[in-house]
Image (tube, rainbow, N blue to C red; front, top):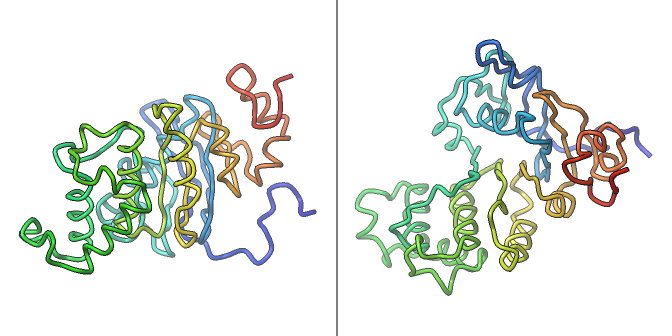
Length: 266
C-alpha cells in the first residue's frame, strides 16, 4: 500500500498545475501557497467548508482573478497571466455555480452556435443551421449524451433546472476542453433530477481531465479518484477518497458541517 498522499505508480502526465499560488485582497489572504496537480484523465475533487477558498482558487485557475504570487501551468505552458478566453482556447473550460446560458435560445441553437464557433463557422452561423453535416452530427451527439433530445427545441429559460445544468455541461464539452472545471454541478437541482445529472457527470469522456468542486459528498465519492481538501485558503491534505475519509483532520473540519462519506461524525 502506497503512503498516504503519494502519487500513483505510472502516473500520467500533468495537464494543469498550480505552484505556491497565493491571492491577497488587501490584508486578507484568500489563497495560501496552494500546490495542485491535475493529471491526464483525472477525476479530482476539491472540497472544503464554506469560506475555504475554493471559488477563489477556481477563479485563479481560470483567469477571473490574477494571482498575487505563484504560477499556473496548462499543458506545460505558463498561463498565470493569460486572459480567461485564451485559457478556454487552450483547453481550460469551466461551468459555474449559477447557469451562464443563452436563455432565449434552445439547446439545439445553443449547441449549434458553440460547436460552430469552435470550428470557426460563426459568421452568420444562424444561416448554417441544418446545412453543416459535421456540426449537426456533433450537436446531435451532445443532445443525446446529455439527455436533451426531447427538449432540444424548447427555449432554455423554460427548461427544468436539472436540464439547464445538463445543457451548461454540454456547452462546456462542446468547447472541446482538455481540462474541465465543474463548479457545484448539482447545486440547486431537485432530488428527482439529481440521478440523471450524477449519471451523466460520471460518464463524461475519460480523456477529459476533470476538477470537481462540490459540497455533495455522494457525488464527490462516487466520482473522484483523487481529492484535495482546502481549509482557510490552504491545502489541508490530498489523496485517494478512502484515505481522505479516514483522515482525522478532515473529520474535524467537517464536524458540525456534514459527515465525510461513510464516516459518521464522532
